[in-house]
Amino acid sequence: MRSFGIRGRYAQVWDLKTGDNIKTLNGHNSWVNAVSVTPDGRCVVSASGDDTLKVWDMEAGNNIKTFRGHTHKGMSVSVTPNGRRLVSASSANTLKVWDIESGVEIRTLKGHTGEVNAVSVTPDSRYIVSVSGDNTLKVWDMESGRIRADFYSDSALNSCAISSDGETIVAGEEAGKVAFSAVGR
Image: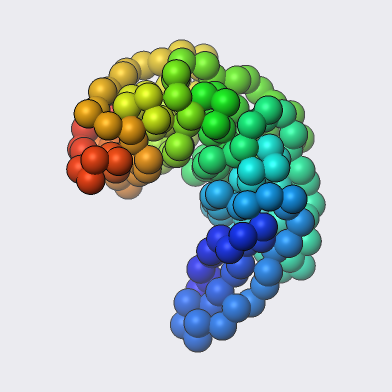
């Protein structure tokens, strides 16, 4: 079993049983802010302050693809559970949806007025959840790019996760609160 971590300008892979560092994924020119693993466990995607996303081959440890398109640092990345797309969030207040195989940007999602701090995708790969420094959580339709729901908090939102049944969103606020909400389909 493997674990992933971020340390400076590279990501690290550890063996969960032994605690040994298996690989260091080195190639970004700035801090690595987030990582996500493909559903098949064969690749890791990293988001960095150098405005890029990189796809890494887990076995070889080498960079096999670089996604360029963000104009500000990558804050978060999430590979869809079906493994076909990835969603990235940036400090430019936007999200981008990418075709993971071709590396082509499918669309840019605009609607936040503060940097997008985290992103997550529902288990059915139909909806994107994003949280921002603008105190909002947004639920987006993956195919149309439209906002399906908005939730507001008292402070900046820094993290989000979706339950395995896809029905509940959990978000962490800068004020120290943890908020729960229905997905809002």
